[in-house]
Every structure is written in structure tokens, then in C-alpha cells.
Length: 394
Image 1 (tube, rainbow, N blue to C red):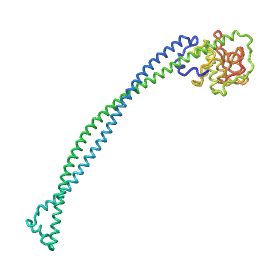
Image 2: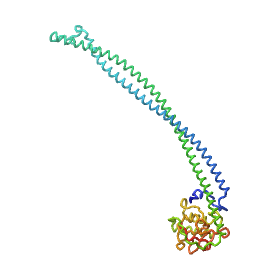
Image 3: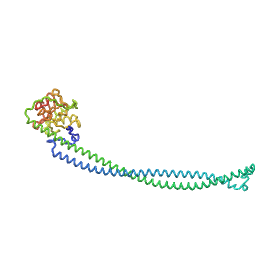
């Protein structure tokens, strides 16, 4: 059975007024109703969030497709641009070669025939060393003319190809530039839509998170009310049984019960708890079953409030009933009691029948929320029958 019964949330949300009794069934039903309403709101928000997430996934897919097309268009544009550059380079190279050929052919055209040329042009022929030398020079000129004729033909072909290639490359580049611009525009639209949807999803997720937190708080309130009611009913039942049980021992024999292996408080905290309990008794606060202050207390409610005021908060300190505190504290013999230790009273000498709990004040005295009739008291630790043979150090 869990001992963690009252959360910090409950402490914060429970009104600081005395309740006439433990949480009622009507209060628990009201808590259930609030929890159900919050769950309905959370479910509706969850549906909206799911729809928004679906839209976001679709928009993300479209954005990814647009990005892929954009990258592909950029690659194609790069290839087309490279082709245009290569074609232009090739056209320039062939144009340079043909220009040189033009110059050579031009010089030869001016001297197409030997006798019609100037003295300077035919001087090399006239100074030939014999017929063979003359024939060799004429052959060289003829070969040079033939080579340049071929070069001219190649130039013309290359020029046509280069021009066609450049036109094609320029056209491809222009087409790709248009396509890239369109894809870039589509990519921006997709990215913007995705970003807006992401904002919407984030907003809905924040709403959903808050609703779920609120639902968890309401669930804790409802569970806490149910558990507090169960504990108070158990304590009341044990207290009522104790009033009808005869032959209760003044102090029960030690049967070897064990609590925690360590205690969690300092001496200063225990003394602070004692001071709180003393203040409530001296203020003549009433005993109201199921109450834990600040205007009224039952026995375990006084213990809980005293140590909470001394600095023990959730999750280190819980609103338990008298019997459960016995297993929740470090056991010390009655001869070693210190102010602030808890005392337990049982009608059968076992932990399961503990019905009352008090705070040791020192010198054999205690602070207690005794009963509806007697209220809060400063009394002897032996004034209540059924004292357990140990104290509980918190």
C-alpha cells in the first residue's frame, strides 16, 4: 500500500479552512466530474493536435519535393551553363585558328602566281639554287595552300557547330533559369507553409501539454480526496472500536515491531513541530475528525500539520492515519524519547489497531488532538490506554 497520499498540489488547492469531516462522497464525485470535463477538453485538443500534425507532415512532404526539384533544376542549370561555356571556348579556339589561316591564305592570294607578284615576293624563287631548289619551294607553297584550304573548311564547320552549340546552351540556360526561379518560388511557398503549420502545431502542443498537466492535477486531487477519506474512515473506525474494547493495557509489551531504518528530521525540526502543536493547543483549536488545520485538527492531522510547518514537504511527508505513521517512522524505546517523537495508542497491542497518535512534549507529557469532546490537550503520555512500547522519530 502506497504511503504517498497527499501531494503538494492538494495542499495548494485545498482551502485553508477547517472541514467538518473527511472528504465526502459528494466532494469526491465533484472531483471526478471536474476530472472528466478536463479529460474531455484534453481529448478534443489531442484530436486538433493530431490533425495539425497530419497537415504538417503533408506540407513537409511537399516542401521536400519542392526542395528536390529545386536542387535538380540547379544541377541542370549548372550542366547547361558548363556546356555553353565549353561551346564558347571551342568557338573562340577555332576562330583563332581560322584567323591565322586567313592571314596565311591572304598572303598567298596576293602572290597566287609568281610572275605577277612583286620582286620582293618572287625574290626567293629567283635566288633558287638550281631547278631542284625552285621545285622544292613551289611545292612548299602549294602544300601550304592546300593545308590552309583544309583549315578554312574545318574552321567553317567548327564555326557552324560552335554557333549552334552556343545557341542551344544559351537557350537551355535561359529555360533553366526560368525553371529555377519557379521552383525557388514554389520552395519558398512550401517552406513558409511548413513554418506556419509548425507554429500552429507548437501552439496546439503547448495547449495540449497544459491540459494534460491540469488533468493530472485534478486526478491527483480526486485520488487524494478518496485516499484521505479512506484513511479518516479507518482511523475513526479504530477509535470507535477502542472506546468499546475492555482490558487495554496501560503500555503494551514490546513485540518487536519495526519502522523505518533511519529518521529524516533534525532536532531543530522536531522542536519546531513541538512548538507548532503547543501553539494550536494553547489557541484552543477544536478537534474535528479528518481535519489538518489551520482552524481545526484530528490527531494525525495535528502531527501532519506540525511537521509540515517544520519544513517537511512533499514528497518527504504525507497525510497518513495513526496506524500508518507507526511504519513510517524510526522506532525508539520509550526510555529514549525526545521532544517531537510520536506516540502511538492501540487497542490490541498491534500496529493495525493503532487508533491515536500524539507528539511527545518532554517530561512524560504530550501534545494531542484528543477527541471531539476534549479537543486539543497537553496531557500525560499515560492518560490514554494502549500506549505502544516505542515512539516514532520522524
